[in-house]
Image 1: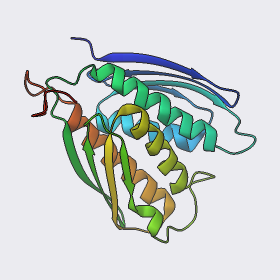
Image 2 (image 1 turned 60 degrees about the vertical axis):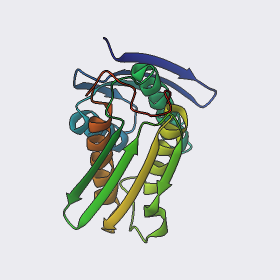
Image 3 (image 1 turned 90 degrees about the vertical axis):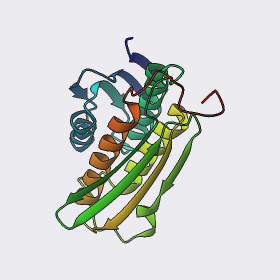
Length: 194
């Protein structure tokens, strides 16, 4: 069974192509935004995912559209690569520290979209370049809405934006890695459908 998908999304603001391979790690990333590429590399490396992203967006305005639309496209690719989700573990959870920061992420590949994003309730200092934890929230919201993913993110410690964003992304990657594993031949639901 090949668990791959390629999705191309084009709007007046962005042009994004994502190829996702759930079983063969490696990354080729070209979003035009250095810190965002760095975060996508964390997703690929710590999630042990194959991830190719070619993205162009209206960065002269700000990175919001590019980041959100990449999340949307990646979510669509995940949903296609999972197929009917038979055999997957479905759930994943990870704690990741980064210096003073500690992030906890829990994933449910339920087919239902929900994002609980607690860092927005906290006083996170600064930005990573022009990338903020609000940009990360929009990336994850697009991913959840179009991937059929429930995602809970808690920041247990941390204030510095770069550390907060990176710890969350690494925890997200590790939780997703566990959730997409094929661990049975059954659908992980008593309903008979996800």
